[in-house]
Length: 184
Image (tube, rainbow, N blue to C red):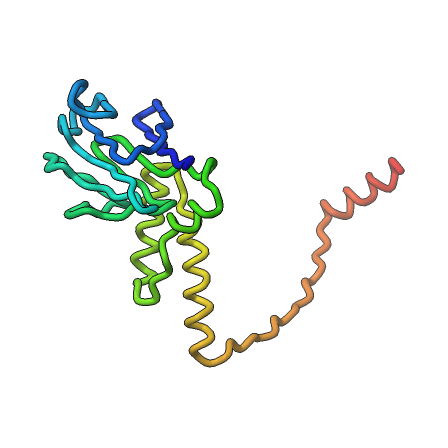
């Protein structure tokens, strides 16, 4: 197992190897990962890794835990390209050390019923807030657009009209041409 989490808080960035259970909070003694942020509760969040799944659980925090800007109400599975936000801290899966198998089972399955518009908004908000861009959402977006296009009538391509631009000779251009010829 080589799954790690990247924790970004302001200018600080850390990498933590995932364990079967990791707790996050402001307390220095009762959690595994202590983060100095007044918006984070003393015991804020728990991340568990079991049966090839990463589960995020809010521990009754005051300000909440968010995955892709959606509040975590109950245990929620975390996939690659998703980010957890607690206070001003961002947590995500480090993609650099994943094996092919880990990458496969941590990738969100494609849901054909998911609204493509919501997906785009989440991606944009996520990129704006974290600096990370969820590239898989962009490829999913292309797949959905292609699927919709194939359901509808074929796309009609129109030929572009090519218009010739009229040459306008001004005195300035004529003078410049004469000067350039002179120096050749």
